[in-house]
Length: 139
Image (cartoon, rainbow, N blue to C red; front, side, top):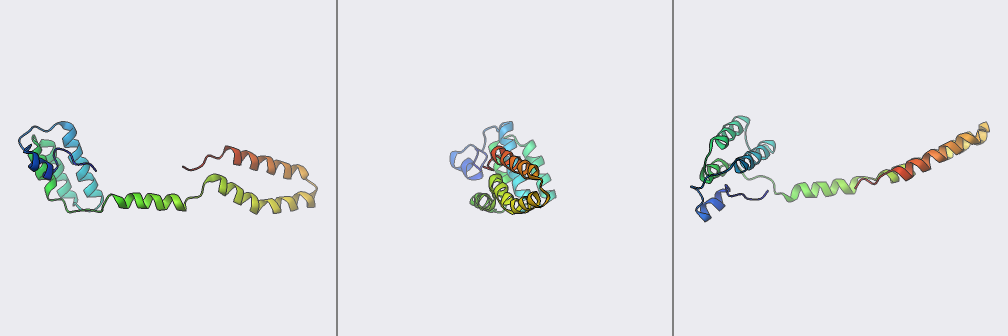
């Protein structure tokens, strides 16, 4: 999250406490409150109280006071690491298609030869090629 003009430290450094805040600044503060609530850093009643104060605030100083007492949360690097770990664990659709082909192909081939339905094997092969060609990677 980027610090806005309502950020407590930025407001104090630049002396912008008395400047009027716009609706976008109030929305950013409410988004910050929502994030803190979802992460468990704010109770529901505290979130509602602070959100009401954010909507009623007029200056950057008032917005800064609303966000000042929020306990520190997890760093922003954690979600990136989690997303990267999920990407590494995810297999793309073509890999799954090839794996299923390697599992089902011997059984299909055996059925085709035992029952003399070579057409069944040919249809299976065409279906596999179609799935493999049309599968998009999960990127």
